[in-house]
Image 1 (cartoon, rainbow, N blue to C red):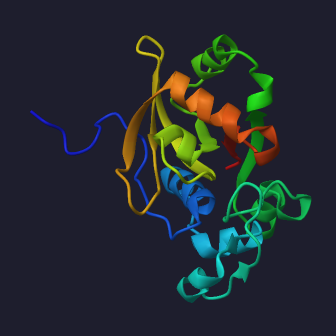
Image 2: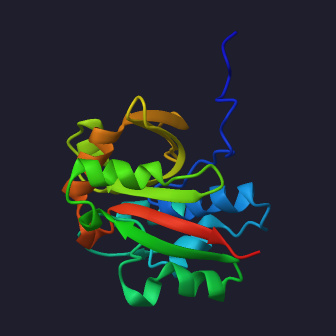
Length: 197
């Protein structure tokens, strides 16, 4: 019998407003832990969300300007928009730490990091969207890691993108290459969330 959704997934997917992958992934984790949800647009705004001028019409109150180096979206690399400060400000009982791609100079080290993933963990993955999906567009994207299959060298993640299947299975090598391409300076790697409740 064919499953409508993966029966072993621990997440309920949510679909993002364009440029809001980071806050929507945070909401997906909050939903899993039954934490009261905060609007993605508010989380995004507090994390420095910047959108193209022609997309302002889709937001209540958003910033616009030149395209940031990692692309439009949140700007969590800037200290004033750091997730942990935002979580505290918005009373979200989560804490984020990072294992960025520069910590894994080889694919073997990257696989070893994925081997440490446990089902009770909540990890986000940050990578270059165009590099992963062989598209012309280059820019950062964030998804929720859902499963690691070391024997097949694959991961499954939940993708909040509004124009995409919610669950995707990707080769570890391809996600590694897209993280290396995106780079540490653009926060590529694993973003680890801890539930403080």
